[in-house]
Structures are given as structure tokens and as C-alpha cells.
Image 1 (cartoon, one colour):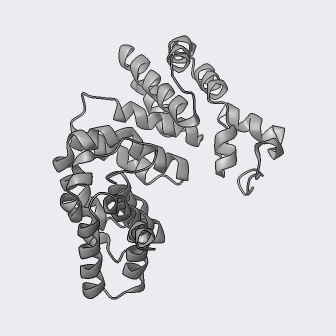
Image 2: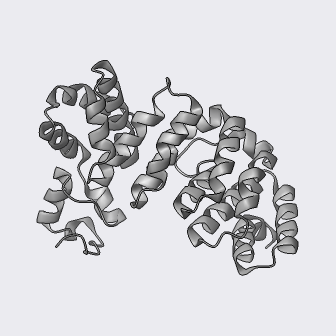
Image 3: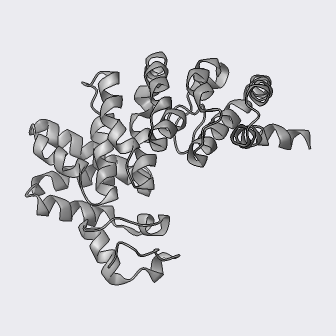
Length: 269
């Protein structure tokens, strides 16, 4: 059984049978080591062959070759974007459905870019469609999906914040976390949202409902959101944290505040 494995700590220790299954899209990765070990070009070829879509291969590989820097994330984005382009030309909704529900987490990551790069979709529909990936069981898909739609979120910031504020009461902590993580002023591996760096106040419609969230996954994101903001608007963050501690004297809020103030704390030392 491969499903219960913990995963190797280094790429060289991944059993060859596991790596072959990963590259054929038969199983999910179980940790970051496996995620980094998958050869996405090989995986792409296998998925296209399995679904009789080999004519898509060369145009997508050309997009990868044109990348200035090839990393797991840039290749992932290039493949997802390439699949979107090819399926759009061929009106191939069937293949989009296949990759959206695929066993392989990396293939589902590609699917998020077919949503993020679809400029014909209104913002609300784009976010509605990405929600299934925000709730995905796999950590990699949850990370990639917010990156796939973040440019659209930044471009339509007011509407995005209004829509995502509604996600903060969702029963699934992964979806609540998406609302915070996707709108971080600085974020990780992504362009900054300059408007929120200069004026973080609009983000409070997302942060306030999460200030005592029971999920540590959500707490980490909210703390990181405010820590991002503290690098350009420290007074704002201190004021909000003081207010939250008065209004919500809980261990959850205390944890968020500690995480939010860590950069400010370093500057005081």
C-alpha cells in the first residue's frame, strides 16, 4: 500500500516504484520532498498519452523552455497555462474535467491555472470555481490555487475582499484560510499587493472574523497577514493587536497577535 507511506526525507531515498507511480500520476505526493521530485514534463507526457491528447505536448513544452527560470512553481504554472490555451483552442471541456478531479495533486495544481488564466470568467465565478481547490485534501493544491488567482484578486481588490469576507464563516478551515492567505499584503512566492501594503484597513473585513479562529492553520495565516502589514504600517498592526487582545482574551487570539508582532519585536531588540 502506498497511501499510508510517510514519504522519504530526501529525493535520493524515494523508492523507484513510488517515483514511477508519481510520474505516471497514479498516486499523490505525501510530502514536500516527493512534490519536488516529480518530473512534471514526464508527468505531463503521461497524462496526455493516457487521455489521447498528445497534440498538446509540444506547445506546452515550448512554453516551459521559454521560461527564464525553471522551478517547480514556474513549470507548474507554465503547464497549467499551456493546458488552458490548448483546451480553449479545442473547446476541450472534457480534459479540463479530467485534470480537475485527477488523482495526482500536481495535475490538480495545473487545473487551478486553467481557472486563474481564464480572463473570460467574471471575478466571482473565478473565485467560486477555485473554492474546490481551496478545500483540497492536499497541501500543494491549496497553496498553488491561491497563487493561480492572486493576480485577479489584486486587480479587483475591493470586490475580492467583499467576496472572500463571506468565506471567513465557512465550516471548512481550508476555505477560511484561503480568504486570508490569498490576500496577504506581501505573501510568499508572489507579487505584493501594493494597495494593502500602504493601507491594510480594507483587509479587516477578512481578518476580524478570524481573530479567534480555532484552526491553527487559519491562525498562522492571519498572523502572517498582519506581520506582512507590519513591515510598512507597524502602527496599524500594533493598534489592531491591542484592540483584539482587549476584545478577545483567548489563547487563539494571543497566538495570532504574537505571530503578527514578530517583525516589530525584532526591531525593538
